[in-house]
Image 1: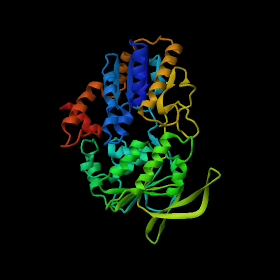
Image 2: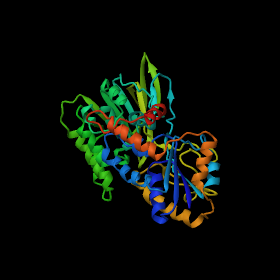
Image 3: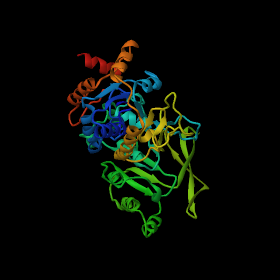
Image 4: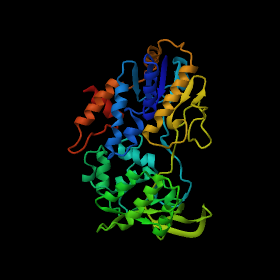
Length: 430
């Protein structure tokens, strides 16, 4: 069986893993629009979470299997048509994730920059698409909108000192910009209550360990204690509430703060007398429903980061659901011999390992449904590349890049990521 996989992140490599387990003779070609593989793990996981990034070791094992090929810097729909892959391979699996930000629909009548978390995270992680972002930290307040782990990641990265990033792979340009920061307050804004926050406890507790910033919770402690009295309260929620209550008890001289604000909906950004403000509509809970009130709050800010979810990058020939969150599919099948897995196939939620079970089920479905009648797929794709003068990076190229990044890392850091495709090509020629 000859399989093409679009994308090289977690869902892609769990799909590779499943194919090699179910049918070890499967020939798999992995196509990635960026030069380097590993997608969300390389460009999404926070640089100071190196243990989480260790999953790359498993993915690397499968990448270097003899019947797995890698073609980096190849974007499906631009470099090569999806239809071409469909004609060459027995099946095509779209595992390209959800790399684009959902939009925050508010009026912005100011010069305030609003970045999506995919942009901001991509900037400090060295994603070539976002490496030129240049966020401005010469401001007193930064606002992060969202109540999940990505919001915590963004806040923590902004708050940390250079020493706190030791043994990470944060980009050097990001570290320089953050070291010059004059930010005093980092606001994390949630529309609902602490009970509804999607933080994981390990990430939330990290906020208490910051060297220069103190976590502060703008929510009534009595209301949080009431939540703890609920008989069937989810354990994850209980731990989060307990952590937020503990934040209120922290005694420190730190004047800089990470401020958690709940029941607040961003409505617009305005400029008054030369000062830019984010306007928040304060919400109430009435009969277990979130209801907007007439009360507003103004936070002066020059930078807003939204961490409110992700959507897919469109691929010509594929239909997305109305909000572009994922590709329309039925149990992973899109059309003809084209399938999808991971965040490209459904809601972009869950941790890296969440993709594993779905990949296994999809591979079994493909093996049961697809007839193996396409021959010499790899030879045909190489012929297509040659005929159309398409340049690409192989897994051997990646091996060299990986070594260069590790060997050129500054002291106390794990790697120095190469970002620019031209510089990558120059390094490979040496």
